[in-house]
Length: 496
Image 1 (cartoon, rainbow, N blue to C red):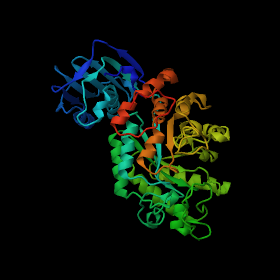
Image 2 (tube, helix red, strand yellow):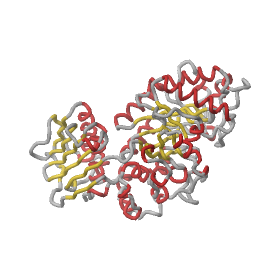
Image 3 (cartoon, rainbow, N blue to C red):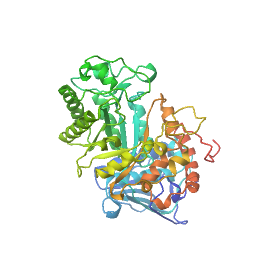
Image 4 (tube, rainbow, N blue to C red):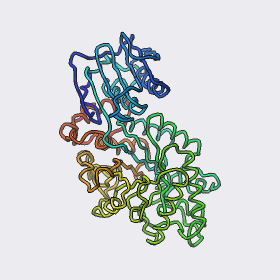
């Protein structure tokens, strides 16, 4: 059964259905591409997906749409008001035409086409017919930052797991993967000249498991894979707190010179780099510099949260220096909103992420006064590691439980941030209780698509009663993808 044009998530900017304009993919359908290398890569990705599902040959040829059954991906000569991530998708009996000004928009349009096709497109040799509803979609994002954060420090997740999560978030037009690489329980990225960071600091995780880490080549592989899905990786090295794994590896980073034992619990706020030591900044410069060299995206995250064991004056000194080091390596600093307690240089693009709703908005108001850009990730709405309800097995409750409706039913304009300072939204997923990919999926789905819609869709489309119907319609696709989602009783899921 063909999906209605307006049934996708996130909801499009505008939809103009044409009941007589349905298109059918069949054995004669070809894929046409025009506009250079990005059009080639997106069309190749789409062709692979559709061949897998339909079993049709679907040859890809250079050139614009032509007579016959054609899916055309056209890069350039698009509506400039839609920006780099916007697109148009026009469906008629003879063609589907996706047009965008940049590769990101073309890819988002292709993901929309994917959602318009039956869920069987996700399985090998799925059963058709492969009908796309007729009409036109015009679409663009509300905010430029639509993020998902994944914590690989408390529990380690493989490259394959991270790549799978990238595919899942990209389906809903998430365009930032904030990768939480270090914490008290584990250090997950190899740094040349500091081998014990991974040999010692990467050797454990919450509960005392074996831990693990990414080599620099593996990290580059993740970054490249994300880029192929138009997702920007923002790596995070948390400091001056959340650093026990680093201190256990290199005791010279402590003020006492004594290495603490490795930590496998979930408490926070007990560790701190020794801010007054020159070695701390040599360490930071090496780590951030190597990460910057491996990260083509513009951002490096420096943490700054829950530094309860760092004296306030030391905290200020650390954040000021860390921001400078990031800038010296050609990147822009991102941090949790506590760092806004430090006077931050305005006009530099620094991003503060608001998370701690227990402070009555104090850190948010301070960040606004600093004139930095704000990403909204309110703990009681957007944190995917919170339980759904009191009966949920996985997750925590420090900001929850957070139901599917609660995660969806909020708007960035309800926070006291000038519209021009809101960069976007983010859905963090910390891994204290998560050990498998199935656990990640259970906590992210079905809540993540709601955060994605908040970041992408016009506020006028925001309505829980209609959204829950669109959300329920995603279940067959998730089942076909072998995505292990939580069947929240808030949603009337189709029988599986």
